[in-house]
Length: 275
Image 1: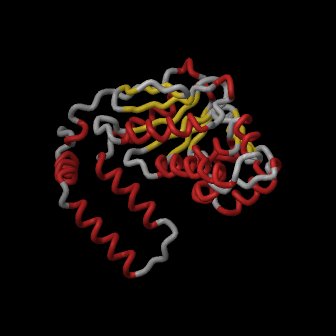
Image 2: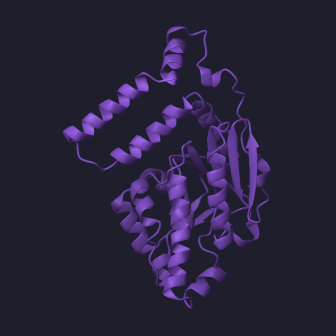
Image 3: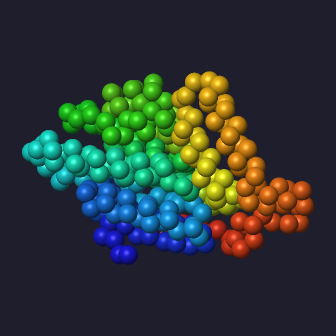
């Protein structure tokens, strides 16, 4: 399918989604939200793909909501603005609940709701020069749709600091708080992501999907007998799976590969000429 705001690559088990509104700083509008939601769901359903990467063409990762849309919001009805917000919420939750590992490839400015995209991904690898700002309050609005994701990524205290102050912060600070999970020089960004892809491909696909689901379920829950019982049931079920039999067999016989690696091709990094 052809998209107006995206470029999509499917290479060597990796789905790479490029936000492609470089002339607008890859700012989010209603079309991009719809297309990102659609492509995330489509690639997630492709059993041949193992990992998904969210990247951006041009010099900016994402400068938040498109300025034209921002201007329209102040004159829209509450019903219209709520509908727009729910579409954005659907996108973020689609990313968070993907059955495959997801990586945000981050460079340049990352403003407002662009940070929400980063926070919704499982991992985020950023260049040293990436710059962040959560500036909604300076426009008289609240970043309500991305706050739940920011809290889970960077913690409540850091989310309070940067959502309230709206000050710019560096990639190093984003890494310190957890919004980025790794940082690298821009010219080494794709090499670092390729290393991470090589590690992710080693994992069993179903086990990764179930691990993601269990982390989402268990996060923030108190340690109760019910939680531990649920964990034990999940562990027992995974031990009797076909993936476990294949994985343990490969572990005990190093010359053998588990089933999910027998036809694996070498992973390919995103093309460097995008940013």
